[in-house]
Length: 86
Image 1 (tube, rainbow, N blue to C red):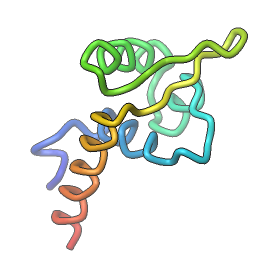
Image 2 (image 1 turned 120 degrees about the vertical axis):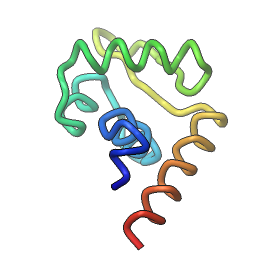
Image 3 (image 1 turned 60 degrees about the horizontal axis):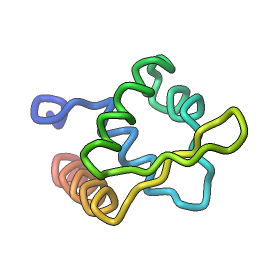
């Protein structure tokens, strides 16, 4: 039922980024969310413009992290998902 109200793949990416212990590169996010690298790149770029994530270059790879605003959104998504499951 959650997928009726929210797009599952962007939500999956946002909730995945809540794990601050892991290094989240674009290719790793694509694999976890079962999407293409191009899709993740475009989505993360839009998220960066909205102030939800920061992108840090680490050699050839780009590391994605949630901002404070992004963490609040990710927490809200998680809360909503839990309400539909419970």
